[in-house]
Image (cartoon, rainbow, N blue to C red):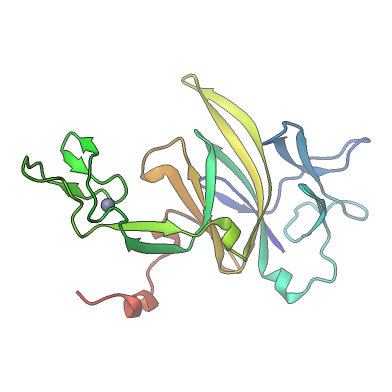
Length: 237
Ligand SMILES: [Zn+2]
């Protein structure tokens, strides 16, 4: 499968390899295991010398959370259409993940009482719909407002989340930032959405979508650029 290394705002081809020692083979360093703090290193095993850049590999599993990366052997067409991605994603908070398939549904608060007060009035925390201040009004959510939802990773057959580790990277104004390292396999035409739970703004999420040749990345609008197909699906107004 093809390989990429991705950060919040960058994507490169290939995987960075840490050279081996007499005691441990060359490997991909994933920092510390997110759960039990042991070192997380994925051995890279090739007969003879390692190639300079690892742009085509296969992945095998030894046991839970234990993988090997090696040469492409007996590659079939299905494997050519997959990508192994090492994410090195610096974040303020913990990360969460969904797939990229976006569904727009009616806000589940429609018709219910609203009691979230902000400076400008009463608003819905899900869709942002505001209700004008009115003492005679019970602040009921109006019959409009939409919510965007995404599928869980576990529901997506084209995404395999292999393992994740963490590295503390630096201290910025006393606020620790963490490098989250994780390995993901994406089948062609699949993508992963990464959310930084420490940021409360439009900049909190990034989309990474493998189209069979490239790993597209950015905001939803940058990755899923409208095409004529969108025009045909869109509703008349
Ligand atoms: Zn709402």
